[in-house]
Image (tube, rainbow, N blue to C red; front, side, top):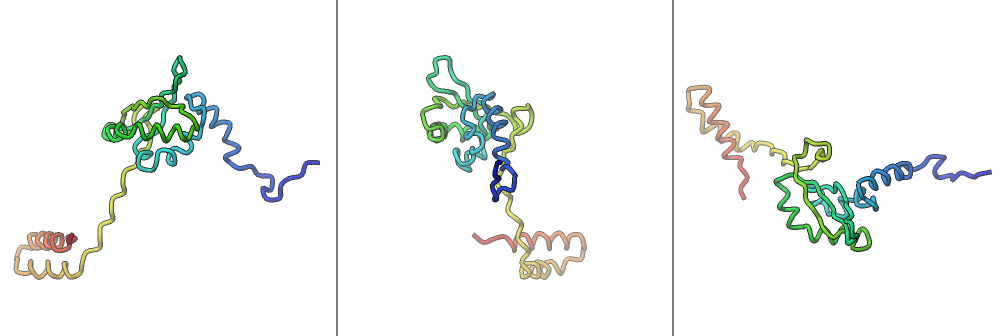
Length: 168
């Protein structure tokens, strides 16, 4: 009689269910160690991982090391290019040996070809600050003498923007 673990209640972890599929999919793309795909953010670092994604690992005919192909968009390609050697060292540390001899960069837009549909994230835009009540009243006071309603409203808006600008 097989005894079940009391902590899992007969359920398997999602990672154990998907491990075989991820490994087969990764091996078909040349990723012998799927850790490069699943832990890319940790291996490359958050800054570089947001700019580039691994697409393929190709092994040469003489087996003197593989070529890792990274996908990035055209604007970020020079930044990734400057960090290729440091990234190669990080990837080889993840493999545990000098597996990657060369890194190749492929540029494309973030949408387009099937391979190019990678979501690159940009820095979040800051939330606009709440208008300063002192700036609002000062702008209203300065535009008070204007008789044209539309011009007064435009001057008040301009005054609010100028007076509420952050002082750095």
